[in-house]
Amino acid sequence: MSVVDDIRLVAMLAACEMALVRRDAVAGPLLRQAARAAAGRAEEPFITAAAQIARDINLADPNTASAAARKVAQALCRWAAQSSQHAALATSGRT
Image (cartoon, rainbow, N blue to C red; front, top):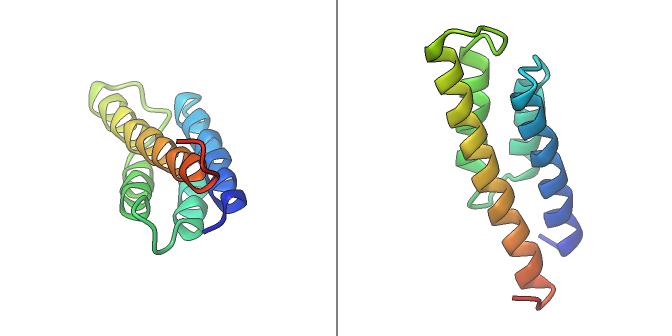
């Protein structure tokens, strides 16, 4: 992937993370879109797992189990975003 692709993935994952924070129903579709954009990369399985978690729970449900699952999806999303950001910096020679 190019630096531009890495940056695009970082931006997509930031939008996904914010959707998870807001408990927005669009989080699942955004995560699936990000997983397609990350096809073949190290981040793909983590984004796919976050998308599956978002699909399996009701994001708006305030119960403890749903909140914990949402936090796990957020953590996976954040890890993938940081990994993509590192890849962008490494590709550009900044690390």
